[in-house]
Amino acid sequence: MTTSAFPPAKFQSFDEKSDPSQVAPRLAALRQAMKAAGVDYFLVPRADAHRGESVPASEARLAYLTGFTGSAGLALVGTKDAHLFVDSRYTLQAPAQTDAALVNVHEVASLAIDAKDYVKKDSIVAYDPWLHTPGEVRDLTEKLKGHAKVVAHDNLIDVVWDDRPAPPAGQIEILGHNRAGKSAADKIADLQKTLSDDGADAVVFTLPESICWLFNIRGRDVPNTPFVLGFAVVPKKGEPTLFLDPAKVTPELENALDGIAEIEPAKKLTKTLEKLGKNGKAVLVDPASAPIAIADTLRDAGAQLIEKRDPVLLPKSRKNEAELAGMREAHKLDGVALAKFLHWFDSEAPKGELTEIGIVTALEAFRREEESCVDASFDTISGAGPNGAIVHYRVSTKTDRRLNAGEIMLVDSGAQYLSGTTDITRTLFTGSATAEQKDRYTRVLKGMIAISMARFPRGTSGAQIDVLARQFLWADGVSYSHGTGHGVGAYLGVHEGPVGISSRYTLPIEVGNVLSNEPGYYKAGEYGIRIENLIVVKESDFAGFLEFETLTLAPIDKRLIDLSLLTDAERAWLNAFHQQIWAEIGPRVTGDVKAWLEEAIAAI
Image (cartoon, rainbow, N blue to C red):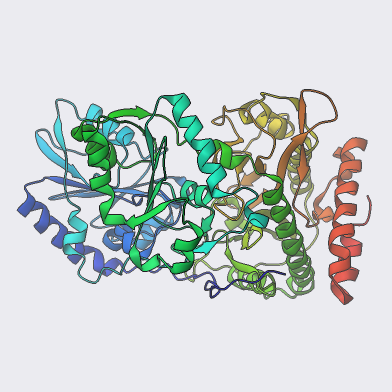
């Protein structure tokens, strides 16, 4: 067992960490700064320059200003009004965390808002060019054309944020070949060939997952994901440059990258970009993720911009054998923790004393018995009864609910082990299910099994197979609003592009892709159902075809199944899946947990 040299991350916090009383003075201070700068509106996104799902405390500007702590949002602050735009996940959370008398909360399907509805004519709308992409700024400018002027400006939140935390300077971990499976030098050589094929002299990387994968490093700069925050420039020929906070750079890192990459302070990035421009270089920049500040600096200095998707995303999504071995080991470790947790749940739930927070805390404790578990891969979704119908529900001390007897419990969780990343959802029960609940649960299960059993020709996309998971719900006139599956990183981000299973994923699925498989059903105000395993794409025995291998090793609750709805093939799949769990996890548990597991995986 490999253990970490880093201190373990803290347990999930259930405090919403918001104080609506602070919104008024902070808005007033920002408006004073806006007046001094001569701007009428200022945009405050949740994102930082690296576009991560988590941001460090020093970059949490939206939370500082509005109190809203969700993972996606955008504020538009005017001299007399303020608007906070969130998606359907945060319709309840956002108004509760902010001062709703001063901030108008709007639920929108996309954060690419129609700004003309909120901006007065002939006004000036300012934004921080390090926090918005070229695509976002183009969209905003087009929508406000002839109505308002859009300008880049220094961040005005930073001007008024007196107690702003210091930037993260977490330790950097270097992955050995047994975990990375391919040297950084070889990855860089492959990338440089791609650059040559694209006609690019260099590429600028801003996404931490791309940088971490390319240089075989991991860090602790943000919660839940082992990211190192920084930038990188990789030329078509010669050594790349990695731009980091000097506080993160150790002799071990310098030795590991000696002869592979140069390391420079992050503040030198702009000069490097200007040099590329002055030399007339063609530079690849991802318009969907890179800050517009990078694109503008290059263009203004004379560079030719090549706007294309980050060239690391696809090769990173194709896990090699070492990465897959690590993912399989992580799921075995997670399977042990889940067996202990599910046994505990079955013992405690009938007592009627469990709460959503108590369930999360117990699950984390079981996972942390394994020393190589360094963090949760995301904040656990723990929804009892009607809270389970809120697809991306996050329990807090204000919303914590007791699980009553006879209610459905939805638990969506994951962990970061040194060997890999996990993500699993199980729908649990404490009594006698209704016919409707069993019907919906079984239709969700049938969809999950359909994806698991799918065999498809090479070149098939996730958009094409998404219907396999939905067909049984559609047959009864119901569906679910989220995607069926997302990509998952190898000891990286639990949500990873650019491949997945939903209508928006049009790229072909490839060997080595690790995806989630998570259909669901949600009855507002009553219950939610979701069943999720992680799967990996592999070659089929039929030439030119691909299929899936299931990585997750935790039982599926059979008490909610309407057996009359399962086909013989589906029963056979479920029995084989449960037997695999017994073979892999059975020898790793003992006593009452082992006895519980043997019953949980018994054939149907």
